[in-house]
Length: 292
Image (cartoon, rainbow, N blue to C red; front, side):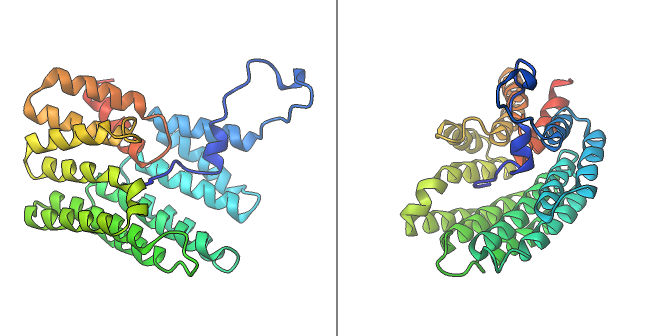
């Protein structure tokens, strides 16, 4: 869903490229922290399907975290690690711990704290809907909206953003439940919310064709799914999304377009290098489809 981010802080640090010569040979170069290196290694293990090994590293980081912020970052990474196995329950468990950390930050940074709480709840929900745990996903999507809307003035994230995210999620959930009429209702509501806030829509409108394609796919309108998902992937910011790529691959597969589907599964696999929910869904599924 919108602005779904890679695991910040530790994971971001872990993605720093290795230097081509020893650090000692660089004048004034600061050594990279072992923690950053281990996060990078654990994230790579998850992407490669070695999730048990990855979680051993993340658990060590949780146990030996130097402060609450570092512990929270490691817990979020652990939640995403479980996402690579489609484990909704454990992803929720660790995202809840991250939310608890942000509760402690409400006084110091209220705008960011409530936003992050909403983000983490939505991230848990995203893992669960992708895993097929629809009722749990709905609970956490609604919780994410509730938490995000608690952000005090001056708000840095508009009410319309949270309303749009929830409507988008409810549309996808309705489609997964086979409720075509409800899904169509939520698409119409999503359009209405976008029209009500042009500033928010500037960043979020690109996710509407994805919603329309998702609903079409899961309600059996394969032509509509192909058209909308192709449109979604053509929009700036969407073309490298492995989840949307996987949805179009699924569409081609259902249409019997074997060669086109295989090409997109390969693309989804190649794009799934981040440590986030889109990659956690796409990489294992693409690996299975490609038989690798």
